[in-house]
Length: 486
Image (cartoon, rainbow, N blue to C red; front, side, top):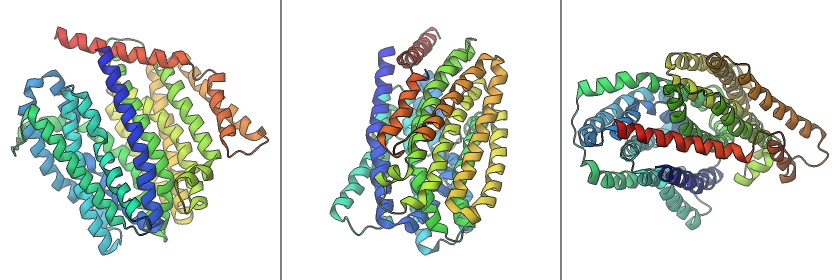
């Protein structure tokens, strides 16, 4: 079981590393380079609005599906049609919740045309995620890994082909068409494979069954929705509050794209830790050593990454984009600094979720939305994209601090504070390097000094990665033994 888990973990990480950065930095960024910040800004506003409420297409069903099918594989055909039917009905509610936000903006005929495709794309994304939930529950991890990147791989092939054929003229509609086509093919292929395991879905709406699932999953779905609101509402507010709407959104998107790429891999880390924390809490095993170990790896890396991107902002943006580099650099700096707070929040919220403290997490998320919206109302009219990035930085750091204090209550040990002191020492060391470094700060040599400092100060050690991998392996082995005993 250890070998199976580790091999599949490596497979899904490698596939995502090979495909998703290419998709983000060659295709997405390439589209923006070709159509310009203003036209891409219109698309980006619509994309974020459609993403805001996509949790309404799930409502925790995917988690329920994976967990229950893993425990009772023979029930997969019984669940399949019922939950699939509910997802189709939920799409209507999703559209009705999304439209009021769009109507607040004057996006023109082209904007509403793109909106139709983007709403349809969210339905397709939800269907792919639902199929992947079945593959994960049935322990068909290789299929799950394939369908985690198939749509992006198809996008690279289709949109990249257009880049090569028509390098000068490009329209944002072509990009949206490529997205829709990639999702459609992924849905067809994934359900063709899945139908051999559980049969083809039939429309069968069971209200009692769905109500039971939604009731149990609602706190988790609400948390995802609230966190999505305070992390994605910025682009909507830029378009609503700033006079130079779409252009400022395009500037903000250039910096946010890099943050989004690193955020995806931080979430892979969280997905790895959640079952470990849950198992340790269930068996009353101390979480402190694992929490400290995880902080050194994830937060230590985030501090270096945020610092390196802050000092090398124009160089990094110049690798990706052709225009508006100087204009997007201020917001990019602030967004990458916010990644430190995001990683701290991810670690501590994962622990609190494992403890089942959903009420506290939802309360924090709700307050964070209010703070973020107020900051955006204050900062965006005068500072545009930079103001939105500053609001994100303040919100994420505040959320990280509150999550950390709640986690400290559970540990109740002075030792838990020491790993935070260790991280602060590393931040001070990077500040000293920036202050006294005599050469050009925008360069590989300068950034490598901060990376080497990770090892010098002891945040990163070879044994830390080995210890974490052993904990993952032991947790998965224990879960397998428990299933066999049941």
